[in-house]
Length: 284
Image (cartoon, rainbow, N blue to C red; front, side):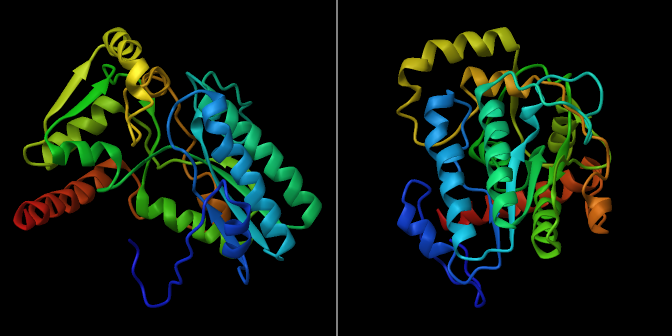
């Protein structure tokens, strides 16, 4: 639960039109990160990612919202062997990437007709002490579905927040990918995690073995309440090559990342994660 004296909490639901209309009343800008964050079929993702986002944008337009920032994904590009930038044509290979791309386009059209400054930020792997990877490490074991030799862009959660807030404050318009200054392989990322997170246990599975296991548990996967790395789509996304040209969006906003590479970001997150682990242990 977020607690801050200057924050007014409003409970909403992307599948409840009325709650969204209430949420945007008196609001100047919307930073939209809500969705079903799982790598499943287009049909299962559509009610929140597409329909819910469109309903929120329409509510924002009716209530005079000036800026709308949408959290999209690098997975709109699919697998790329060269760095992606503002000129790279999206070619999603997964339903998650397809629906993110469709949502971007629909929101952009509504915003243009309503006079709302719209930006869609195609996020990379956003890492922090509360992300899925570090949560699983604190629980005892992180199982990864691939050898990690593919290159991917990463971004510290604090820099992600700073970027998206600045987009809202400056009324930034554009649809671009972002990442830190040094795209890195998953192997490099996890080597840093192991070095700085005492007791981190990571099990790496070959992609084919992870896929076989994912298909085997597919019949019961729908009963799992939280997102994970055990769906075929999640496994394929983990093994994509998607590296972003450095400083996109950041330079437009006059910003620099506080954690320019994973070599600054991962040690800071590992330290925070260990503090959380110790705190949880003492509470138990």
